[in-house]
Amino acid sequence: MPKRPDQKNMAGNQQELPHPEGIEVLTLTGAALEAALDDVARLRIAVFRDWPYLYDGNLSYERRYLQTYRNSSDAILVGAFDRGRLVGASTGTPMEDHAGEFGAAFAATGLELGSIFYCAESVLLPEYRGQGLGHAFFDTREAHARKLGRTHSAFCRVVRPHDHPQHPAGYRPLDEFWRKRGYAPLEGAMAGFAWKDIGDTSETQKPMQFWIRSL
Image (cartoon, rainbow, N blue to C red; front, side, top):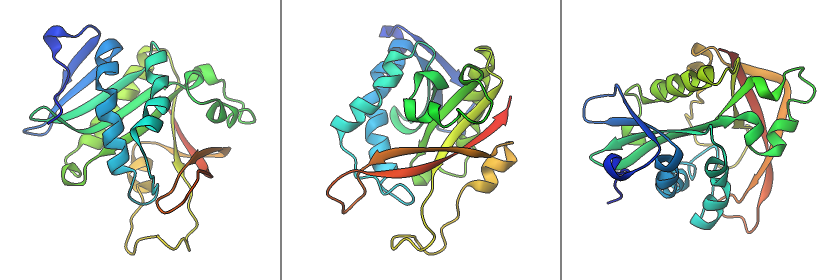
């Protein structure tokens, strides 16, 4: 069973947060963040395999993708642990430290990249949802962004056609959750990001819509 980073033997910053009973929620930065990234990769592969991402991931791709968080001195990882096992994670970086394609999406919005904190993935195993961890993930990243002097927080979501053959019946998007937290789609802020869908033989570009809020 993967274990969380050992606080006694780990440089970097870890801060324990309030959490649902039985779940330990830690804020990781620096070396502690880096040590947890392979577990984050495995969690991303498992959770993003479901709709709407349909991500056919592998550890090699994940390690390349997650290199951003090793390179960014202001990156943050919020991890939810159940008896030492990572069951949920959310990440974030200053927008200019993330993929160039994402930054370019803001060129016509009038917003300076240096004012935006990018809330990247929030992944949580299904059996741990509905316990307030999603709010904890956003609360912590937004607080981190404010400490960095950022005035906006943003994330992006994949846009799939409504008639997609793998669209599950009864699927409910998280739009209501995001709107209650003050986020809304930012008109004209679209990016493209490529990954391989389940059943495909190669990567394809996916449209990504940015959502944003003032902090």
